[in-house]
Amino acid sequence: MTKTERTLVLVKPDAMQRGLAGEILRRIEQRGLRLVGLKLLRIDEALARRHYAEHEGKPFFPGLISYITSAPVVAAVFEGPEAVRAVRATVGATNPIEAAPGSIRADFGLEKGRNLVHASDSPESGEREVALFFRPDELVSWERDVDRWITE
Ligand code: IDP
Ligand code: MG
Image 1 (cartoon, helix red, strand yellow):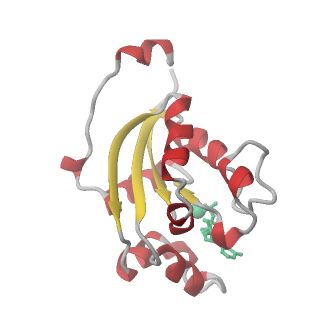
Image 2: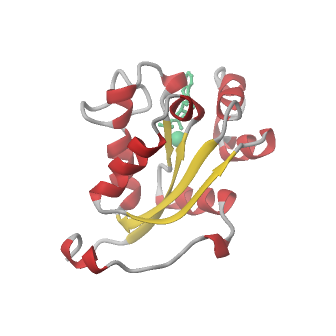
């Protein structure tokens, strides 16, 4: 049995402007991961700085903060075995040009600065980021009849 994890997905402002929220969530849901949290919000500067704290001081940081706060985002929490690695693979590499064919970033993107979607990079980041965007009572634990056909 692989460990159940939770991961935070953000449909970033460029994807929202391009009407890709449904497409992005569909691809992740279709893999079999279970949606346990969902909201639309406008990220303010304080939340943006906390979420991207590891990148503070890098040359792209100011642009990243203005990008992520420039329009609403859809924040989603997905749960499942190795959810972090599964979603990162579906999302693709940071640079869309290097992202695997068929991944979201490869199919819809061209530049790192407009790469459409965020996904937590480790189970620990997943826990931290989910807590930044959702209160515990906003997350819904549930089981689906189909789960036994997706996981052993
Ligand atoms: P990740 O989103 O694939 O985990 P990170 O290296 O954690 O990538 O960077 C966070 C975000 O910062 C990226 O998704 C992208 O939006 C932005 N970013 C990273 N590197 C660059 C860059 O060189 N130019 C512009 N934006 C960048
Ligand atoms: Mg990252």
